[in-house]
Amino acid sequence: MSKNSEAKKEAVNVSEMIAQNKKKKNISNLFEKLIPTILFLLASITILTTLGILYTLLSQAIEFFKRVPIWEFFTGTVLKPLSQNPEFGLLPLINGTIISTIIAMFVAGPIGLMSAIYLSEYASDRVRRILKPLLEILAGIPTIVYGFFAFTFVTPIIRAIWPEVEATNILSPGLVMGVMIIPMIASLSEDAMTSVPNAMREGSLAMGATKLETTLKVVIPAAFSGIIASFVLGISRAIGETMIVTIASGSSKNFTFDITQSMQTMTAYIVEVAGGEAPAGSTIYYSLYAVALTLFVFTLTMNLLARYISRKFREEY
Amino acid sequence: MIKQVDATQLKSKMNSRVRKNAIWKSIFLLSTLFGLLVLAVLIIRVVMQGASWIDIDFLTGRLSTNADRAGIMGALLGTVWVMLVVIPVTLIIGVATAIYLELYAKRGKIQSFIETNISNLAGVPSIVYGLLGLTIFVRLMDFGNVVLAGGLTLSLLVLPILIVSAQEALRAVPAQLSEASYGMGATKWQTIRRIILPAALPSILTGSILSLSRAIGETAPLTVLGIPALLIPFPGGLFDTFTALPMQIYYWTLDASLVAEYANLAAATIIVLLVLLFVLNSVAIFIRNKFQHRY
Image (cartoon, rainbow over all chains, first blue to last red; front, side, top):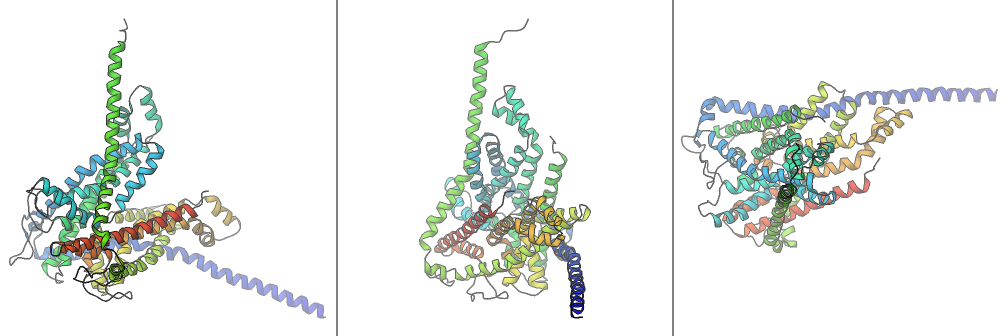
């Protein structure tokens, strides 16, 4: 009798345990099913960010174009947002942006590419392992530090050599920006060149070509799409760079090609106007967004172009 | 008739080609060293200008218009508070996104759409994020220019960097580990939580610290948010106004034409910022070397 009840008790316990386990499993099953949804929702924050950027820029820029005709904005050569009769011409800013980018690429293009050639083709493993991280430190220095460096160190040196250069000018930030972009071009170009298979180099060397000839006639042509893509990304970086030009190039909205003068880039204009507490709702406040939209389109185009080039023209080995 | 090779002509030709190679080799080396030279000049210059200004009073003092008494405690605290927002926000969203993309999303349109979107976001200039933060966090949500608004803006800015590095970390965990876990009857989430995430954690942390160091050096978005550099109380919470180290450098550099000593203060602050970044990066490298498993 007692034995029987004990067995019964145990049986109850087992069935209870099974039921409990099932319940547990149901909960964990539910959890298991919920997880992908939760993760997807968190992942969609990146999409919301893009939508947020587009919505912010477009909605406020449209407000601006209601007040200033779009044609006038993109072809105007005079930018006087604070005057009694404000004029909103974008060309001075586009001009400043393009000129600073050209100066930067004059530095970063050749030096970045030549660094990449050295690191990928000439340097021994040991030397590369020392030089590469050091070069990457350059990329990790905050841009405000470069701005300080351009303004308090590079500009005085340039003015000592070339007295016509003004205290704020586009040349000095352009040069410093170039230095900042060197590691980016060097490392992306180096990646492109290292991915060229060794068999091609060896073939060329075996034919009696020197290392230089191999590099120029075999490796660079094979890695060309990657190198060009790295240049385009460098340009995009230069267009979006803000603090160096804000500090060292001043805020004159000159429409000129004279690099000794102060010019303003699109990014620096945004800092000046936003930092100046432009009252929300004023035309000058909305002009921020129109300029930022243009900037966004510029850099997005460059980034898409870089991806297109590296995909479309990549040589597969 | 085969023309005989003229040994002397060949030799002189070959010699000039070899010499050309040697010359260009040194040009390539010099351009590599150029970047490093600028880096050295920059650091030496900043240290020479600012090092003598750094003392306990400078580190713990309040902001002052008197250069001799000015301190950066407020900016330091502001930067720390911003870090306290950026670390959890980017880690949670970034790791979740990476897990979704690597382990849950089906290879297809949605996945490639999200990935393309992330790589485009990585290329958006930081100043545009500033306008996003100004419009959404400062104005629309009405936070004002407080720690939370600055932290969230910077989080969105560095999120793409963290996601990509977390994806790489997850991808580097070998399939055998998760297959063994599935083989023992573990579910997918159990496998992720107990096997894959712990294995990928060192790399994820390294990526997190690197994106954090990007965030604390950023200035442009903060200028747009309207972060002040006035005499304000030290920030003590998420909804306090704040200033940060890069903003302090910015204002002192701008005002250097008014008071010459401000340039030295800016240099001293730059040293503090660079030391902070150096420490963070050293920790990242330490974690990577110490805890990373090689499978």
